[in-house]
Structures are given as structure tokens and as C-alpha cells.
Amino acid sequence: MHATLDCLTAMAACTLFAASAFAQSPEASFFTKPSAIADELWHINGPGRRHGCSNRTGPSEKSGESNKPVFRRRRVYERAIGDGIRTGDHRMNELLELAVSAHGGLERWKRIRSIDVSLIISGQLLEVKGFPEHQQTKVTIDADRPRTVMEPYGEEGARGIYTPGRVWIESRDDGREIVELKEPRASFAGHVRDTRWDQLQRLYFLGYAMWNYLATPFILVRDGFDIQELAPHDEDGERWRVLQVRYPKDIPTHCDTQQFYFNSDGILKRIDYTTDVLGGVASHYLYDPKNFAGLIVPTRRRVVQRTPAGPKITGITAVFLDYLDVQIHDR
Image (cartoon, rainbow, N blue to C red; front, side, top):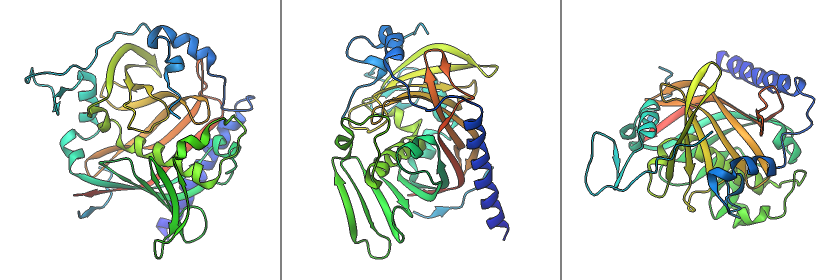
């Protein structure tokens, strides 16, 4: 009974949070034309990278809550230098090392096989794309590779499975495939603001997004990521340090260049990106971090429109994620 009341309370809080954001702004949409921000970032990224993005079309542990840029490219070292954490042949950027440690540490992450999150998904973006209802589901990601399972998903008795090259919906009872989409990212070609998505396109979007959200900042230590620290940023009465990250092509994500904002303790507070599959220019805020079996996880996420003047904090909520429970599964 208490669990049911807690769940209903969380759903109500999510609804009120999103509704209040809608009421506070006369703006009609999260989306904005990215060209203005493209001009602002042109001096950072150079030709060919407008607005910072490409057009790349064990046992279970129960959950327990216990800009003038300054470029610093991550270098390859022939031998260990200093006390930085090493991953493969790379020595970690000092800020990235702080962030990884603040979120539980690299050694803790290496012991994790998968992560389950029970959550409520809502927001104006999904309404525009044809999914106005709040969705309560469970998301499971693999720690080692981009793979996400959402259940329930789609029709009753079904679950959705995301991988970079293929998404599909199958029966939860016997694994029988119901429908699939190969090369899903290519299916977004030519989409504009009002283009509706089908269930498989929404599955692709939520699948890659949730995998990235739960695996960050740990995936940033992998080979192929280009890490550059920018000038610090002042917001919410704090000074946040900023990492600009360029992703390797084998990691599906919102866009290939993103900015990550960390507070003085190394906790991730905000992410800036453009969503290639729909053209939205966004700031993504993270709230209420909690400790689940040694991993520090933000339990609320809110995405808002970003303009050259900055994020529209009091504007429309594009996506709101409210985590109800997190479980960590070790190898």
C-alpha cells in the first residue's frame, strides 16, 4: 500500500512539475532553428561542425539511497605520468577524473553488468511526436555496449529493445518478434518539428538517450572520445566547470559534440546538445542525485529549449524523466 501511494505521489509530482513549466511560458514549442547557435559556436568548432553536431544520419543489489574555450586535448601517453586514472593508453583529463570519482568511481563502474531504472517519461517533445500520455516503464541498459530494453513498451504484453543498428518490439512471454526497424537513425531523414514518430522511432530515441544518460560520465573515458575543457560557467550561484566532448562515430547519441557542466564536487549538473534526429537545441538539467549501491545517479532530469541567450529555465519542458527506483546488477 505504501509503495502504491509513493508511486502515485511521484506521478503527481511529475505531472505538476511539467504542467507548471508549460504555464510559465508563452512559448509554443521547445524547438528552435539551430542556425543562431551555429553562428555562436562556429569559432569553437570550425567549418563542418555547425552548432557543434554532425548529421550522422551477476547477483542483483537492491537499490539503496545512501565562452572562450581553453582547449586541453586528451593525449596518448607511452608511460604513466602523475597520478591520473589510466584507461587503456589514455590518461584521463583532470576534470573527467573528478567527475568519474564523484559518480562512484571507475572501479565501481567496471563491476556493473546492467542497470534497471523504473521511471515516468513525459514532456512536450513526445506530445508533438504523437505520444501525449505519460509513460511508466522499466529501462534496462547494458553497461558494456549500447543496448536498452524497455518494458512494458508498445502494445500490451510487449517490450522494446534498442541496439544501434536495429530496434524491435517482441512478446514478453515468449520473445516472439512483433515488428522491427533496421538502420533506425536513417528513418529520421527529412523530419521536421511536427513530423510524427512511430513506436519504433520513439524506441530508438529513448533507447540511445537512456543508455547515454545512465552510462555518463563513465563512457567518456573510452578510446575515441575527444575531451576539451572550456572556460568555467556561472549558474545558480555556483561556478561550473565545462567539458566539451566529441563522440566517436560508433556511439549513437544526440549529436557528436556536447558540453557537460560539473559543480565543484564533480557532480554533473547540465548537458548542452542539439538533437540531430529532430533539430531541437537543448539544455538538459539533472537533479536530486542519490546513491544506489555505490553509483551516484540523478533521479530527475529536465530538458528545456536553449537559445543564444541561454536556456529557457521557466519555459516548456521538452522531456521530463522521474526515476522511481534504480537497481544495480553486478557481474
